[in-house]
Length: 471
Ligand SMILES: *Cc1c(COP(=O)(O)O)cnc(C)c1O
Image (tube, rainbow, N blue to C red; front, side):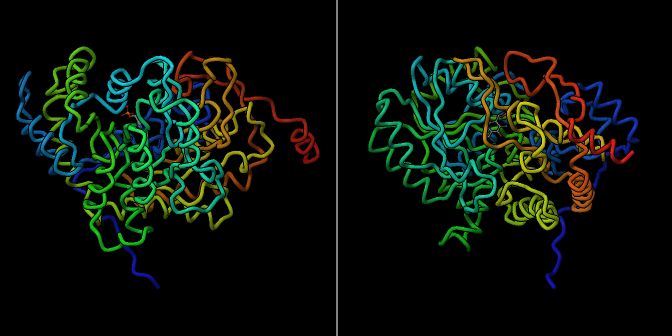
């Protein structure tokens, strides 16, 4: 028997949630165009749409917010925020932004010229959108295993050095303003990158004089996986591991809405003075003064406190274990999920879950809608809809991974909530042949997954036959 480990916090304030009837949920999802992004949160029982900005703050963070300095310029909140970023991440300079994409916008605008190529370990929606907006082209250099939901690899987020070398040879180092390495890799299923891979990638890029930039959104979760899985790191505090990881980068973009345990915020951090200078010039235009960047003083104080809470070893161990607790129940029941289980979410493999639904009929979106109808659990599609269209050809990009993401907010739900989710997913899996595909009836021009609308397709001929046979 193993001794159970409970949440390393207790509850001081609660937020009631509402269970709905199946009829109410059928109406709600139809009104939302079968897109879980368009549901009202009051109609959701357990909200696993995202771990972005959905964190529960601590009493200490709420207390820090009361200390917020709302001065327009030079607020003391900024200096506390700057000190925390310097101390924990180790970069010399930081510019706050309203969230991660604000930082992506700045760095893309500063470094990318039309025709540039930006290699990265799998795309991320907003990251690639900003690169393309500046005339750049994203090239995927993640290891092959990342595109296979069943491949077992402890560091499935790793950069494939041969692929990276080939890109450098093909386009020339002068056309690569930086390589963007995400730790962990969200769209691969929250998969980590090893320290050794960061070290080797750094060495290769240094040889060619190419910058290495980090998407540090979930770097603490990545640091925990290094501690668990990489030789030489077992006894080290997550804080030290994070610091070493960041030491290989020239800078990072950050969505504080993830790791930093807050509800809003982000930053661009770097060592290079000239990039800082450009970032300060642009941030004034797009976000706000360089000492608030679209945030209130209190938001920066909440981030500063959250930065110290996120590197607590007990906290991060429970965080990753809770995700695994959900994923393991599904694996034990034979439900197809992305393996190994990642750091922030469990990803259902909709291709294997619904083999009778063609990718052009949006199996992941259909599964997310069915999960909501079954139990009021909200999840999100990460497949053909999120992937969008190729800007050159206008064709749908067809990613190998067609996933439904069950994203676990930090410090919000108990392990008992995870049991409720696992039960519903297992129930759907047992009745999977009753789930049919969708048809897209409204498609916005960019980041379509947020607002696209769908209608259910009639059940397939084969399924109708089966239903008739039952009658
Ligand atoms: C969320 C996220 C972003 C964008 O951050 P926002 O705060 O949502 O703008 C960038 N990269 C990754 C990996 C993310 O998960």
